[in-house]
Length: 161
Image (cartoon, rainbow, N blue to C red; front, side, top):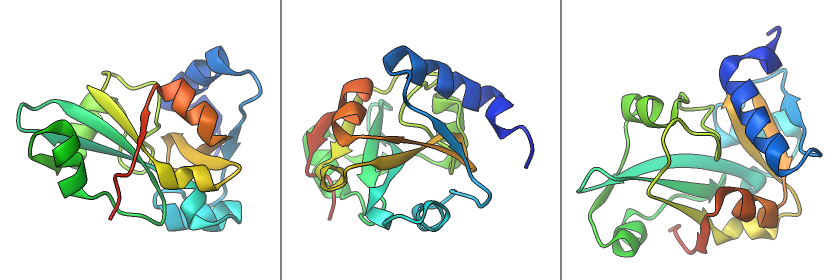
């Protein structure tokens, strides 16, 4: 796929990242990173080092972002307790409308709307470098766990089963 780095959403993520750290580089992949397994294969890395950016909503229709290790699954019970509200996963249309990104390319940053909160899976801290989508299923960026926490202003928590 040509000109991936020129796509509108990719440029939006790149601009956001550059404000934080000029050394963060976008990586255009030859293979899709639509799933954590696909991304890990494309990057020749462990599935756990892939950041899944997942959108959830509570009963008051507040949207919350969970950044989860690629080899883990969010516990709806745990995040519902954290939010003190029954919480469900947002559907594809809600995700696109709220974040501006389609599933498979949801970045942890540069959303169309700001989530009410961001929770970050503590399992991601097990990796020196982690990789997140950059607005397109074929584009990612590498970042440290500490930098991901800082750039998203997310809160580390045990949110997986």
